[in-house]
Image (cartoon, rainbow, N blue to C red; front, side, top):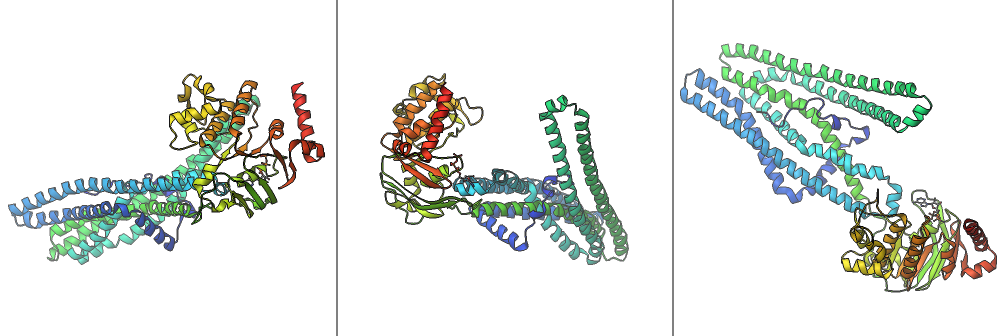
Length: 608
Ligand code: ATP
């Protein structure tokens, strides 16, 4: 009549393998639990119902042996048919009830838990999408994905059965002790003698097996990476006759994996007999001492029978609780990491009282200085720049000079460390996000393609845009025909990997998004990839139409783009070293003239 299923050594393998850093202090654990309960508030009815069902289940599980005791003492010893029938029927009812309740509690608790996890996943994802570029500079994508996968997995393990087993086992253990002591304190003392041994053995088992599983996990990792390396590098291995060496290395890891597994098995093999012997010894002691007490008329045969039945409620919970302890600990650690992530504030937050940017305006970059938080190196220093509405400014300069950084600051993807960027007289930090994204649109070098159709991908430019809006945007920049002529037209499926679009077409999608967004300012990182002449001219044409009537800040990688701009700003070593129209700068014979000369040389060499 025990619920929840058994918990052998392997079942909790994944959760048992806890890293040292996973341990929380009691205070941290308390805070995590309190916050988890707050998140459970919307489900408080379900939580309450689950608690009631768990208590009822425990009650039924505990009532069984009492019916057996009654049946033996009244039904069998006094040959009372009525009492025996009652005991049998009562036992049958609580047996069936505990089966039903066990199922119900698993369903209820799992439902609450899964809803909690769904909310958590949604919160974390929303939070991640709201973070600034600075956040992504300092966080590794792998770690963020781990929050959503392995940390959520640790919690899943807890909510699927772990929690039910933990609560019911704890209740069973406590109430069994209470019932045993109230039935016969002397017999209860005999039973409880072995309990400390079982508890100590369980604690030692948990510690040792945790270490052993971590070791097994490491060894499996090493074997797998040797395997993977061998398969990916098979050509080199064969070309240099390294087969035997590679097999030798694989063999070492493979044997180490076997040893680690055997060590883990030895730990289990040592532990389980201790529990068995404790169980058998206690039963024997119970029957022996119970027999003596029964002779003296101190306990009934039924009580001895009930004690024997209750023994499983005594040792099994200890065994399972000690194993569940790891599940609980890793779940609490996972929750704490997730809460930690949710607590990171976005550096780019909208200020209270933020105002909308004016529809049109001039750009003013004043005494700007910037360092990335991750490196703290000064990337831009004392940069000042004014751009009139409708002006096109090309940023040129050597690689690593700070062009992209300056462009990103002008779109408020980062905030300046010192100085300010304002548009139409409003500091970008005082602007509402909605107006900022509406006025200023960033077109990256390589537009990211999301899983979906061409139509869906362009629609990202303006949420709520209809199919007709998308078609009109494509037509405006003269690329509708191009996409319509694809076999499936605008419905052509695309995705980031294995995209069916060429590099040029991907750029066209990016431009179409900007055309649909219809911003006052375009911040453009010109693509560097070489396109075939046909596509190149389509992209150029689309770009020219798109730039008309807008303020444009373009990171120019091509001579022609810089030439066409109203002004060119030469960025070098974190500052603007020259600024002016193309022909003036060429005539001035400075940095730009030299750059231009090397560009023209390179392009005429390429043309010849
Ligand atoms: P390129 O033409 O190669 O794109 P750029 O002139 O646009 O170069 P930036 O990308 O602005 O140069 O980089 C300026 C400096 O800032 C470089 O030293 C670069 O290493 C550093 N940098 C750029 N992005 C980051 C980042 N996310 N975190 C830390 N440092 C960065």
